[in-house]
Image (tube, rainbow, N blue to C red; front, top):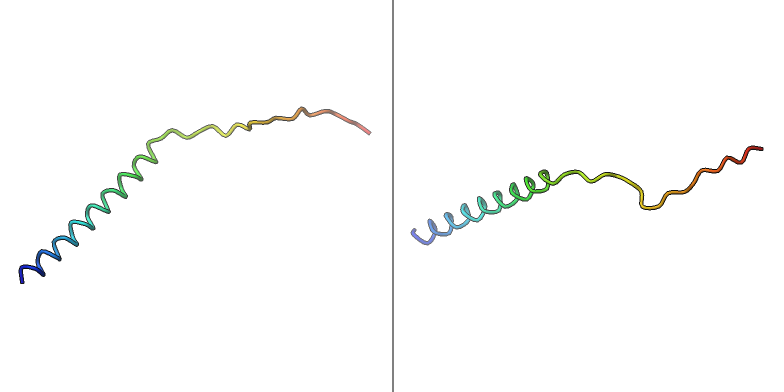
Amino acid sequence: MSRLLAAALTVVVAALLALGAALGIVALLEATPEQPNTPLITYEQTDQGS
């Protein structure tokens, strides 16, 4: 019975650890500031009227 209890406890601890790591990663990703969406290359607009 003690092996079954140890296995169940290991599964619970592993699940809690995985959940904590996932929540920590999400928190880190949300904490980073959003990067500005500026283009690297810009083209000049020339007016070529017809």
